[in-house]
Length: 339
Image (cartoon, rainbow, N blue to C red; front, side, top):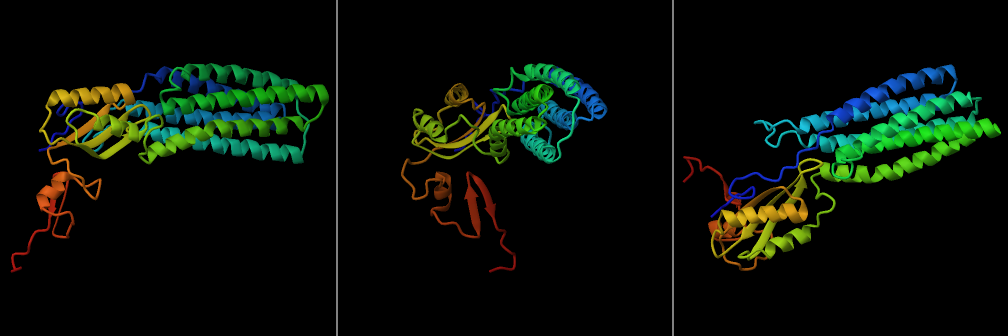
């Protein structure tokens, strides 16, 4: 007997759709694009490579915001015949792209810093300080817009880190300008840039690791598979748990599929509904598919072997003429000329 469930029978519950940050993305893109134009213009007028470099970094952040905002919009689209889960996973790819983009931006900062150490040049320090100070306000305000969702959504966290990193870079430019204005030592600015680049890498590494894990359908951070399996094994009537898989559907949604062996018979929709509800409450798994198998609770040499397989075939080994997994049959069709 098979019973597939998304909480009870074939129900869907617990979808935590991405919170609405559309206005935040729009405001952030407009503000930062305007600031990029101002910073690049004054960078040329003041002959400041620091401002031009920071403008390039800001431009990469505008692109990052556009990608993250687009992914958030795609996540709201409904499912289609081609994409039965919708396009929620686009938020995972956007988070990965943002992490890589931040690292590329750091590479640009380091490259420019090395060049400025080797070839120091006079800078209009006061102009640099004023323009970079405006950058702190613009990027700090944009980061504030994304602060609310930065802990729960990896995509929003990527946008938040972009803005925080930009504000930090602008702060370094201000401090470097002040130090140069005070001491005349032009090496201060590139050294501070090295330090801020290291800080950006440190803060981005976790985002890169998590987004890469999710893009490879890994288990989201904060969920321990052994804990989930123990919870399912302790459910009344469950003799064995196998084929347990947990992965992220998006940066805010987690899915699970599992086979439960219940020799006492199908437990009914109430069991399935309560199991899904507790998976959501305890582990944040909102899209659960549970398959019930009525079979003997005997042990198998292969823990992943499905009782339905052994009962259908009458043996454990698989041959090339028939293969069954979880009730889905694939048989070779015999040739009519074959004896």
